Amino acid sequence: VSVPIFEELLQQQSEFEGHAIYEKNDEERAYNLLSGAIDFNAMQSVRALGALICHLQSSIFSLEVDGTVPISSIREVDYLSCLRIDSVSLRSLGIFCEESHPNVLKGQGKSKEGFSVFAMFDRTRSTSGRKCLKEWFLRPSCNIDAIRARQDGIELLSKSDHTEIVRIINASLFKGFDIPSLLLRVKRVTATYLDWCRIAQTAEAAVDVYETLLVLRRRVKDKNQLSFLDAVINRIAVHTMRRVAKMVIGIIDVQSSMEEKELILKFGLNIELDNLRSTYGELHDILHTVGEKVLKDNPLLDALSVEYVPQVGYLIALTGRSKEFVPDDFQFAFAQDDTIFYKNETMLQLDSELGDIQADIADCQASLIRELEDYLLSEEVDLQRTSSSLAELDAVLSLASAAIDYNLQRPRIVEENVIIIKGGKHPLQELVVDSFIPNDTLLAAKGGGTISLITGANYSGKSVYMKQVC
Image (cartoon, rainbow, N blue to C red; front, side, top):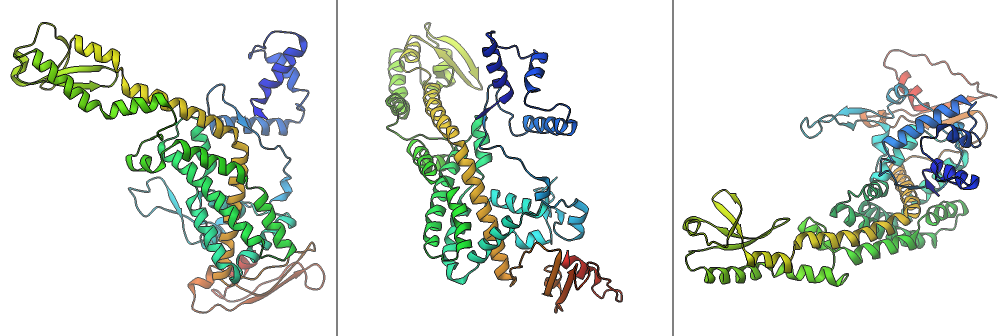
């Protein structure tokens, strides 16, 4: 499906009524059509939809007028599925702690994560993985199945038997980049040589992760852990990622592009482009030969050079005493510093035969890149789904690494209104004291009560105890 959805609905309505193409400013007809899909009496939904559209227009969908954005799925999100925590509580509990960047010049206007729970658990290898992990900390899930699935993944990836496989997966994730950001630059036609190299590298990294997960799957026996792996594997569009890597690497000379810091296409893609680049490579020798001929035809000149100026053409450059003996057939073009440039019949002939060679090369390359962009955007749904799967895998790997380092135990999630903790510790406080005394917690509707009264002297640990339970 593509958007703008509303314009497509209006178009279909116009065709059904036998009218011409609709007028975009026909607000009454637009209202009547949309009222069949949206309940305008539900003011909260209408306001939320308006805010969402404004946000999308100003951030994600800021493309050309006729630009389209593929929609992979439309689903209803239950607002009760996530725990809503305000920013003050997040700071008070030490979940997040933003600090000013220590380098005033480099980090002006930016902040970095300080000593916090999130900083402890953030071992992600990719930008998208860090975004996913941060989203989990900002809006903790209330879905028991989702929590248990993550726990299965953490338990699986924290086993010592899988250390080498985890290391390989982490190395592959580290090679990848944020696919949504790369695709957005492709849509805006602002992708640089570096973006294309990163797209190829990310596609190859995704394939490596997929193949490594298949190896891991053959070793796993637990049904729940297999379900976690299958959920990750099935969302990686491996065939698409292989095609993307093959297409990009087949068209773009990645190594040369990185060395020259500009987009360089491979030879053999287009005969016209190959001929132009070959001519451009020999251009210095061609102009030197032409210059010698012009100098021979004009013996009064001491020296001259023939130069190529993009968008201007081929020119004769005179300096020094040669400027005093300008032949009659030399037509003044322009002067720069101590050099004067001229045109003559020979230069006009070069303009006709060779043309603006740099512009011609750029046009041919742009045509090939446009085809590559069209193909890449046609696979956007698979690319986005793969990116999401890899991001979640990276987040789970990060939590598994922290669980190993801090010797964390898997909690058992139950439906009952009860919290039972044996030997609980505060993860941050334990790092800053020589010895931390663990504490038990029992909060239950039956047997223990849902409220505990904590007393003690100042600096006895009451606040730390409350924070570790929360």
